[in-house]
Image 1: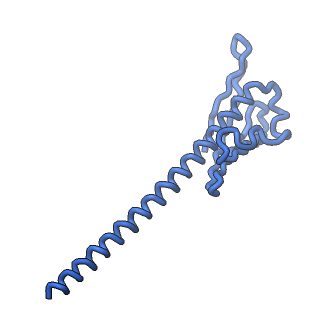
Image 2 (image 1 turned 45 degrees about the vertical axis):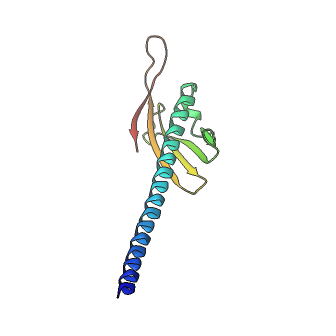
Image 3 (image 1 turned 90 degrees about the horizontal axis):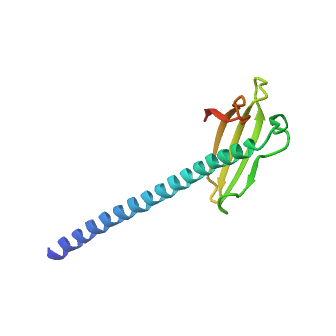
Length: 136
C-alpha cells in the first residue's frame, strides 16, 4: 500500500512539474515574440525620425517621392532592415509628404509605421520646421 501511495505521489509531482515546465516555456516564447515585435516597431519609428532628419536638409520636397527610399538598409542594427519611402500628398500640397517606414528583423518579424509630415512656413531666420500631423 505504501508503494502505491509513493508511486501515485511521484506521478502527481511529475505531472505538476511538466505543467510548470510547459507554462515556463510558453511564457518565455511569448516574451521573446513581444520583445522582437517592440524592437521592430521602435526600429520602424527610428527610420521615420532618420527620414525626417534627412528631409530637413532637403530644399525641394517635390523631387523626394520619385527618387527612391529615403532610408534603406541596416542603419541601426545588423539584425534589422529598414526601408522608408516617401509619397506625395494625396491632396496635392507640395509641403506635405507621407512617409512609410517598414522594419524587418532577421527572425521575420515586420512592423510598419505611416507618418504624414508638413513643412511649416519659414520663420524670421528662414528656417522651415517640420511638423508631424498624422502617425499610424
